[in-house]
Amino acid sequence: MAIDEKNTINRLAQCGLAAQIYGNGPQWVICLHGWLDNSNSFVPMANLQQPGYKWLMIDLPGHGQSRWRSKDAHYYFIDYVYDLLNVLDELDIEKCHLVGHSLGSLVCGLFTTLYPQRVNSLSMIEGIGLMYSDEAEIKQQITQSFKQRQQIRDKATKHFPSLEALVQLRVSVSDFGEKEAKLLMSRNSKEAEGKVYLTTDPRLKTHSAFRFSLDQSMKLFEEIKIPSLLILGTQGYGFVKSNLEQFKSCFDSLQVEIVEGGHHCHMQNPSRCIKSIETHLNAINGT
Image (cartoon, rainbow, N blue to C red; front, side, top):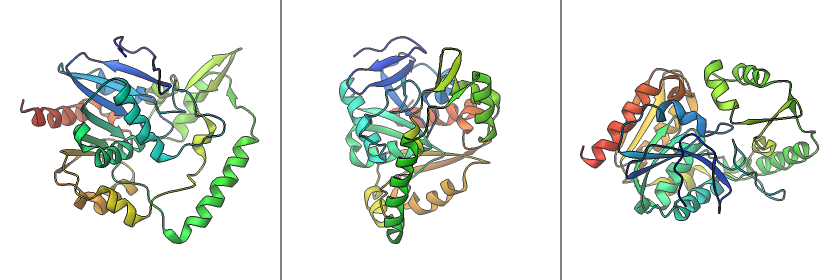
């Protein structure tokens, strides 16, 4: 399936996913965003990219302009990995570079451990390893997840008087300003009958009923031989740094770079982040 128009909503038919494409180079760069974000989070970097690559920036299911999962389904982390596999198969992409932010980094990382033959390089922004759970807390995790599902099911659809109101709400719970919030929320919303509605599925906010244990996570991530890059923001999330200490031994080749900014440093400091990523890609290509 061809996708050839910059910054338009193109739907991957089999997966029901919306995507944007930037560039027309011969090598694919697949970008996966963070939780409750969308593909617009990569636009600041994509606007600065150099020739040679084709960036496919995907809205994960339930995010942005992508379809929601069916009413009897929920959002399990592992299914995002399967979604990525489906995208590569649908577009006949044999091998690609992966770039992820936050949740997207974890998805890209696990995909790399499962299908290393399909990955040229791995670039992670403010995310590494997996979110794991203590085995002693598994019962509580399941019951809490089920309780949240019931609460979400009974809630009325939320709306806002304007996009600006939605932007201000996002700013109030984020570590970035109006510019970044507007870019994200313009793709995470739609207008109908004079009101603005979120296009993100409310079920995304329910806790996962299942997470791997630490031992399982370490087993999954052992011996990653694909060249890998991790970008951390100076004001990024502390748990990402903790995960780095936990998982760094799993990587044969892991480069870590610190850039000015918060958890969304790729939006706040796109020129610095794109430089690091393209240097990483070019080194693999020998250019």
